[in-house]
Structure formats: structure tokens, C-alpha cells
Length: 381
Image (cartoon, rainbow, N blue to C red; front, side, top):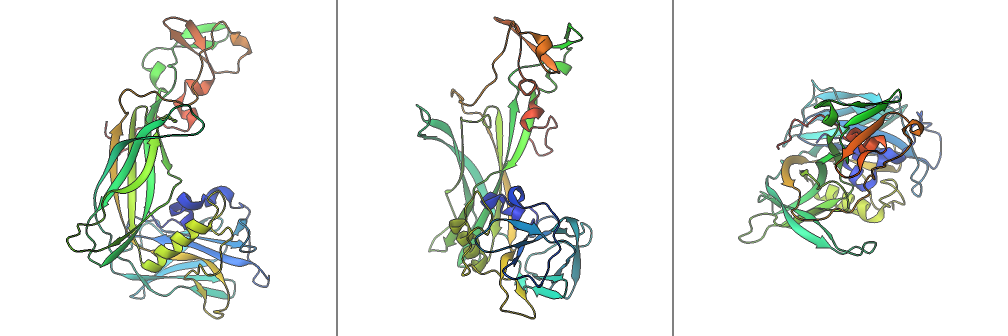
């Protein structure tokens, strides 16, 4: 994981990238009733590290505007300063080659916007607590819109014992799954002719992999007790047979972030009081305070937080559950249809019973369902 602005790490909470205005915005410090929003998450994992700056017109709105032209630095306790460059409107990233965050070192964020200067205090990067294992258990759940229960896997995580008396974790989950198209491209209709597609070209768009952040949030609080062995049986996401995710092979990557109590309470408060379909700062009460302040005017309210925590990743692979039916929209094979009236490309599948039939291109090309035919480097068959 990278420090990705909370819009990357906390996309689980709010999907900020999908609802933030994309227009460039030059902040006018004379405006009233508008508030700076700072989003950042620094871990010990690989750079680049990202800070997102935006401006909201109030605490009861989820419309934010990115702020361009700011100077953004991360400074360590030794006085080393690292400039972040603006990669996109309002999104500032560190240079890959000159900055790596380390355990037990304290960092602070410094921002200059026009004549205004903002910063945090120094925050120590807590070492990550290790992950013992991630595992899956079969689970069935009732669902109102179906006349049957869903079937799938519930994932769990065990963490090692923390050296501290208490530990506070936030989990970012990323799923990757392998899936197939409904049909192979056996033939193509072109220039009023049906042309057979040779193997392996006929199946080269049949199998894909797709990675997505899971739009859920998970927080775990662990208090050390006598003879305790660390966090155990903590539930994560549930994945079932109402999508194609478990049809072939599925992988879950969990990033466990060990954080300070005040950061943990901040994120929990945001998750409990925000509308998950809107912005991170939708209807945020002022008592959910951040840690960024105006150096020259402590009365100015600044939304957001620069969070520093130790992170560690672990991954699990599971195969499709045995003997279950999947219930998601599937493509129907159309036979005896006028191929000339269909938009190209027109692919055809040879069914043993129905004969040649066609369907929409996304039924043949798995990339059109958001996948890639390039196997991920981490993938284990």
C-alpha cells in the first residue's frame, strides 16, 4: 500500500475519486465558509506517497474542488524535507527515488497555499504488527431478493501479538479474481462471410483477471490479556455466488495498518457518521477533528487528517466452491438472427445442440467486463 490520499486508502469508506469535481481550483483565501480538506496516509510500504488537497464549501456538502499550485512537503524528525509534485489536479506525490518511510521515525506534513501555511505535528510511524494468516470458511446467507440463500466464503484474519498493551488496526482489502467469458470466439462474421477463428486465437479473450478494492471498511481493536496470542478470527469480507468472482479462482489481499489511537478513532467516527455513497466529509461534525492546522491561525477549521501507520500485507487464494449454482446475469446465445444487423465485431459460438449463435461482444471478450488477459505477477494457479 502506498500513502495514497485517503481517497485511495479510504476509497473503501467513501469512493472519493468518483464524486470529486475534476475542475482545477485555485484557492481564494479570502472566501468565507469554505474549508481545506487534507487527505493523506503514510506507511512503511513502497512509495510513491500521496497527499490530496481539496476544498469544500461546508461541512454539509460532499462537493469538493481539487486545489492546484500548492507546495507540499513531508519532513522527518531529522530535518530532511521531501517535496511532493502535483501529479494530477490536487493530487501530490513523492518522488519514487528520494523518499522511503521507515518504522519508528516521526514525520510531519507541511503545506503552503498562497500566503497560508499548514502543518501537522511530528507523528511516529508505528511498526506493523505481523499477520499470522488469512483464511476462508464456507458461509451461507439469506437475501431478500432471491428465493434461495447465497453461498460463498467469509474471510478471516489472525494477527500476531502486539508489543503494546493495545493495538488498533484498519484493513484495506483488494480482491483479484479469474473469470471466463460466456462463449469462446469460434467464428467471426465479416464481409458477409462466416470465418473460423483458429486456436489459440479463439480463446485468447476467454479468460481474464480483475482487481478491485473492496468497498467495505474494517476496524479491529485489540486489548492485550493474560495468555493472549494476538487478534484472532477477525471477520473480513464475504464473497458469494451472486457474482462471477468465485466462478474460477479468487484471491484476497489484506493490508493491515497499525495506527495510533487518535487516528483509529478518527477513521471510525468518519465511517460511522459519513454517508458511504458520498464523500468522506459528508455531514462531518466538527468534533471529528483532524491533525492539520494553520500555523498562523489556529482557529481556522481544517478537515481531514494526515495518518501515519505501519502496514503489512498478506494474500490468500481460494478455488471455486464445489457444487454450487451461480446466480448472476448471463449471456444468452442468439441463433437464427440476422448477423448483418448487428454491430461489429460479430462473434459466433458453436453450440453442440443449438449450432452457431451470437451475442453481444462482451459475452466473448472478457476485457469488456473490466478484466485483463494479462495474468498478474503474483497469481498462483
